[in-house]
Image (cartoon, rainbow, N blue to C red; front, top):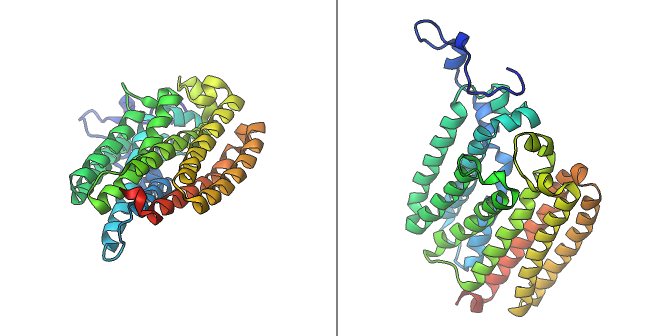
Amino acid sequence: MSATSSPDVVSSAAIRPTGEPTRELRRLPAPGAVLTLLKPVTWFPPMWAFLCGVTSSGASFSGKGWTLAGGIFLCGPLVCASSQAVNDWFDRHVDAINEPNRPIPSGRIPGRWGLYIAIVWSLLALAWSSVFGTLGMIATGFALALAWGYSMPPFRFKQNGWVGNAAVGLAYEGLAWLTGIVVFTGQMPTAAQWWCIGLYSLAGHGILTLNDFKAIEGDRQMGVNSLPVLHGAVEAARIASTIMLMSQLGVMGLLFAWGMWGHALVLLALILVQARMMHRFIASPVERALWLSAAGVPLEVLGMLVAALALRASPLLHG
């Protein structure tokens, strides 16, 4: 298979005169290839956001171990994994240029198996969410809708970096945080919790932009207008850094306003370290995007927990 061919297009030689598919078309994907398709490394952010939502709710963990484990499983190995399979299927032509060794363009996920896995995993996620009640199922359904809309024509939110990254930031951070609250309390978030959900969803927009620097050439060829394609690498790095910093500064300001000074100062320290790292990133964005994602983003993620602990520590913020 050439690097630019479509994985699901089958040549006439692949079909026998009787209509029986060849051995290649009958081949099932190996479990290892399926696991690679579902990308376990990407499951952590929504799982962590779910845990932050639970923490911010003020609900007791006592006697709810299975509920906690079930919610984490929903947000990571089910919903997030579904989104990865969906994205890899609809991005198979772009990946053939940028990352030809990924499961679908390399042929390790043959035929239309990538699409079948995406559908089945999405249905499993929706079915699993039903055990968490109506609110949990609605939040999961919305997250799955964003995942499919992000990659699937005619919506394909990712065609515009501003829209696509906003959708993923909302799904990965905001909806996972929301799910943690509704699963453990059976209620919608309070005003203070909504502020944190919104601001950390916005921070997710900047985080998602970091992933676009490695795919600039393929995105440009396939008409995917990521922020680095639209604005150039350096300007996109400034935009991503500004979004990430301003959203966290917004949370810090709210914590000061709510009288949670200790938590706010911890958050400020984390922000200052990130700002220094972002200065280096902007100087060489293509080379250092993965470095910032690996070393800087965990500080933002830690800040999410600090904010959640602040909400948990002040009963006034739950009213």
